[in-house]
Length: 242
Image: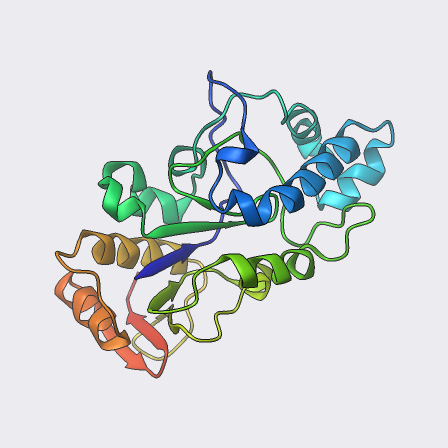
């Protein structure tokens, strides 16, 4: 089983530590050159004199201009395990740093900057969404798609908790894919609470004595963890009043 997580908009900046070493990140052989190009473009854009253009390219408001300074210093900024850098509701519920090494090893985190990172990969805090437009780089989902298709495993079971453009950057062709959705008892889609639901389900799957190999196995583990679930093809629907 492989669980693919979205990145978080919010991140905890490491207070100390050596900077990122691209050669030490997951799938370095396949992705380092692509990472170098995006990193250089992001640093160059964020450090440029045309601040308004940089904010627009990155989809940031004037009140978020401080993110430009953070991005401009990425190559020398302290790095820490991705499991500690990414924050937000999903990661608060998942509590990835508490899990054992084997469980963390079943996780990949999607990233507009890195393509993907493993939970223990050391990265700095950054700000770059998959919808950003960097100079001389087409849409970031399209940019990453060929390299991720070659690099990432495409067999077994993939529990895909990404959304939007991050899912567009890599679509498994051969693996059995399960997604997680949230609904009210009346059948209304839950959008505001779905990140918490996905974090809870991911934690249950990673804590299971044996990782599931099928969608039915995912549903059984989620139900055993106390969730009201319904399996709709490749979709695990979690029914909640939250």
